[in-house]
Amino acid sequence: MRLRSLLFVPGDRPERFDKAAASGADAIILDLEDSVAPTRKAFAREAVAEYLTRPADQVARLVRINPVDSPWLRADLETATAGQGLVLPKAEGAETFARLDAGAVDLALPLILPIATETPTAVFRMAEYAQFADRLLGLTWGAEDLPAAIGSAGSRHATGLFTAPYEMVRGLALFAAHAARARAIETVYPDIRDLEGLAAYAARGAFDGFSGMMAIHPSQVSAINLAYTPSAAALEQARAVVAAFARAPDVGAVQLDGRMLDAPHLKQALRLLGEA
Image 1 (cartoon, rainbow, N blue to C red):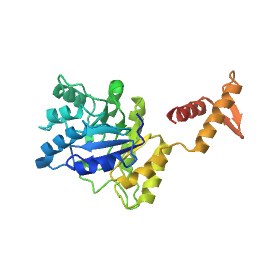
Image 2 (image 1 turned 90 degrees about the vertical axis):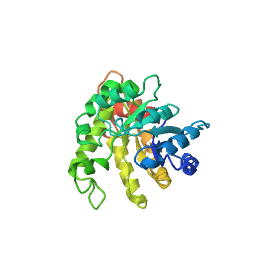
Image 3 (image 1 turned 60 degrees about the horizontal axis):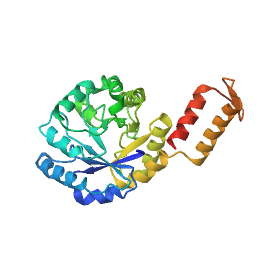
Image 4 (image 1 turned 180 degrees about the vertical axis):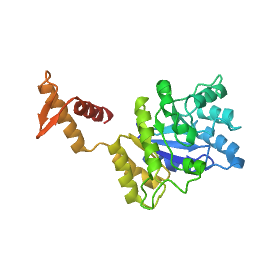
């Protein structure tokens, strides 16, 4: 499953489902949580369940459930089983997985994408996801709920860059994903009008080691896909690195275009080619 772009769509807006699926996103996240008012939860579940009975084409369909301590857990899980992934909000490591499984008795859950930084406790539990590596679709983080949880004024400077606490959280989430051998999925860019800022942010995420990014509007999808698709030049360079090592199988370091390369460069090149 390719996951460069993951587009949220409110679960109680079924008229938007097909538009989201046609946006070019690799996956859509049918949301039962934050974008749905409590009085609309039942309607959203029914709409999502009906939509998941239709052919999926090439777009992965994930379901974001409500938190595991909500009264809607079992009903949400019954809906999510028909999707190709389950987005787990307010995740706090192993304890949340235990509560998830307790609510999913007799259900076959799809792979899970935890949102791993939405509470202060969650920040200190991210290393625990490595023990669930075989159940993970990826690992992502969020910078919207956490400021509210700790009473901060926000997570970003006026320039759009994260403040120091949230840069730290972002880095921890990135490394936690890789420690769990899971896709690292970048969080959303909230200003849907600032496509130039979005493109720069998405490019930075790809540079830092994220493999995809979430979106909140169809207009964001193309820039995200571009950022997380290796360029022809990058692939050509990666092939050149692999070829250089293939020509010298008995040495630990090679020279290419005036640069000295060793095992980490080869590993990076192989990974890029594998992703492509």
